[in-house]
Length: 278
Image (cartoon, rainbow, N blue to C red):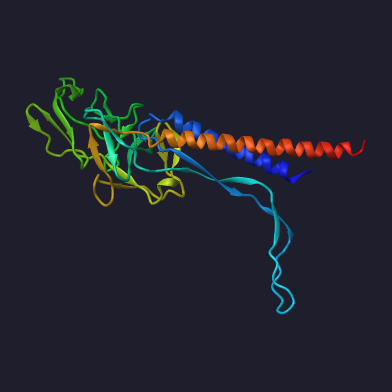
């Protein structure tokens, strides 16, 4: 069987994967905190027809090796961790990270990481994500805004409705005023940094989880020791560039078509070989 046919098949599979990644990028062009994917290729093993020979003085020069490539394969599917643009929303609990790091959230007893900072307060004062995950502070504990008093039965009364003003500083400190008094010890929204952001694994719902290649997460205060600062009233948008994605989509489409032509041409040659018997 012709080697070119198998090379064409490998190329088709790879460009199909590239189109899958491009389609996902375009689908998430308006997803807060989304980091685009990128596919890179590498050549597959080459079949050596003849090896290289060294020069023989006064007789003949050296000869290069003769090899036939056997197609391509996926080299990597990267997560491009570049800064997305910040979109102003004016909402205090919308928080964007300017710089490196991830918000820490707790889901089902496990810690996950995200760049999407559209946070909310539930009716007991917990700072949560849109899916209800608890947002963690620099002490890696859920952030709770206290307030209110206790009923005669001892049950806590939610104090969220008593907040007169609320603000989040660039250092992550959450300040609020209840009864005309500013809180003394503001909780701090934590930022986790990794040695290798590209090693994080996407877990869905705008969340990432650590892997053996991402490194251990290190909780830091925003703006300290290389961690990014927080921008309240703004959200980080997706870092997908539509013009770039459409260009890559055209390239992948033409590459796919070219590989199908390789298979068609190989098939025609095989047909001629079969016809030799007639």
